[in-house]
Length: 258
Image 1 (cartoon, rainbow, N blue to C red):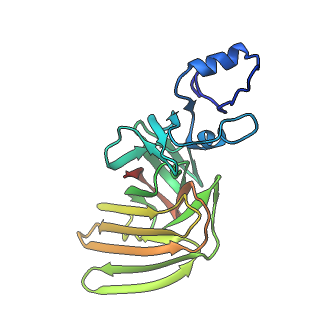
Image 2: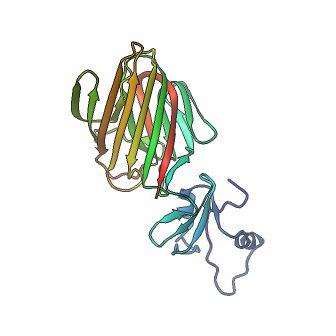
Image 3: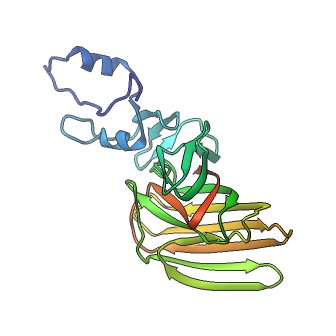
């Protein structure tokens, strides 16, 4: 947390004697918060300002200046497009994972890799790219949504998946996680998956759409598409990718800027 980071935005009363720390807070200018979570917690409490239209804030986690438009926080000077995001932390079921400069996560020998703190109220929809470089077996790669470091693993994930190879196949399933892909060989030539998450940080159903391309060691090319939703109304802040054995690769998350 930076030297100017705040945990509250005080509302002073007439005649109140201010401390040196309070005067420093006033002279800081735009309040600086570590994350959007600490930003949201800083308004409306006892002795704090009520959040109102025109309020500014700076978020250290994303290096963005934001303003409140009376309904939601908006980023200043951010052109519409994909904004790279850095997870607040990562966890693995086995193996290892590293957060790289720019926000990408590299993992190896992992039975699962969890990205925390990538979904927030800053953006409504999110885009993620998974590039797999190795897998221990032909196995499904699946995804669960998570909040506060815990996966939602109940049978609340509905999805339809389709595959195009030499013919079309499809199936519909309700299970404990979204299907993402099935690498066909431990000797992966290429396996890339693109995932779009809709409304993950809102208290509504979270929808997901994935499109992945597989080139196996025999040169066969597969296209798989998945569309589905998680039927609960949890406000998620991250997700987990998991397999029955282990896998390696990189994953990067972006927020869709308006």
